[in-house]
Amino acid sequence: MTGFLHVMVPHERFELLAGGDALTSYRFGTGAAEHLFCRTCGIKSFYQPRSHPDCWSLNANCFDESVPLKVEGFDGRNWVDAKAALDAASPAG
Image (cartoon, rainbow, N blue to C red):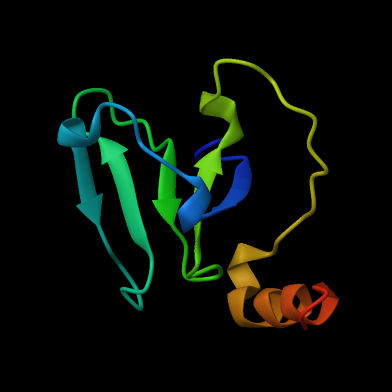
C-alpha cells in the first residue's frame, strides 16, 4: 500500500550521499526491520528489511531515473512462508 518497489542492495554497495539528518526511524512487530522515512515529507525511500539483514531495500519508485527490474511477488501477509520460499529459490538456499 505504500507503493514500495524493493531493490535489494548489499550494505557495502550503498552510500547515502545526503539527507541522512532528515531521516526518522521506527520499528514494529519483531523489531528486526528498521524503517526509515523523511521526517519532512514522510516518504520511505529505503529501509533495513528483516528478510535481507545484509542489504538495504531501496524504493525504485524514488529513483531519479528508471532502471530495468525483474519484479517478483512477495506475500507479506504470510511473511514466514513467503520468506521460506524466497530462501529456497535463492542460489544460496
